Image (tube, rainbow, N blue to C red; front, top):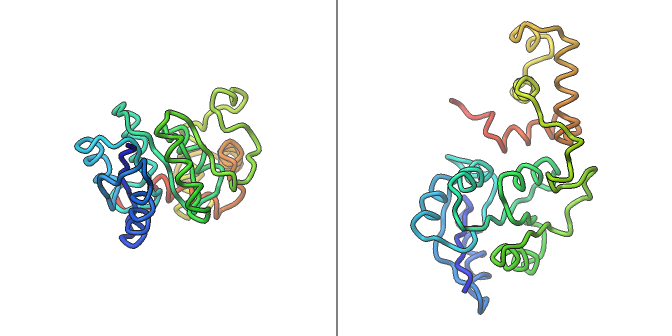
Amino acid sequence: MIRVLLADDHETVREGLRLLVDAQADMQVVGEAGDGRTVIDKVGTLRPSVVVLDLTMPGMSGLNAARALKAAAVDTAVVALTRHDDDAFVQELMNAGAAAYVLKQSSSATLLNAIRAAAAGGRFLDPALPSPEYPRDPRRRAETPPVTERETEVLRMVAIGHSNKDIAAALNISVKTVEVHKANAMRKLNLRGRTDVVRYAVMNEWLRDP
């Protein structure tokens, strides 16, 4: 029996997912969570086979919850369930240890296939996801260097709404250097414009008050 924890901040979504999962002969919902911190607590106590994890939740995002579960080396497999089809989101979740990535727009059969694949120790990417410009397997991306600390700092300030001039003054670098850092970060993360940058910032909780 595949023991499933449902994590979404919308109760109606969880209710629908519970009906779907509990209707399967090989699955059982063992718990629910409405935020990332509760996910971590319930994984620790319930030890589910799979957690179906929304990305945008209060308290702690699904991405940071996945990172925490990976750091804790738990046996629970993560199935990310989200409306975001941005490749940067997929990359971040897979790097954070997620076993599967499913779009909320897809069929219920797609989610069930992802849960079964994750429970069996496999990986699953929603077939409806756009084709990436580079392989999603980090072991096959040696040619793409990681985003540096300075590039991340610049991208964070861009997402918050600072101009290139403001960023240059704050970091004591030239405007041209800011533009280079921003361009490099966006290229590495496959972000195509400010909308993508803001979505990426939301996923990483950059826009929340300290």
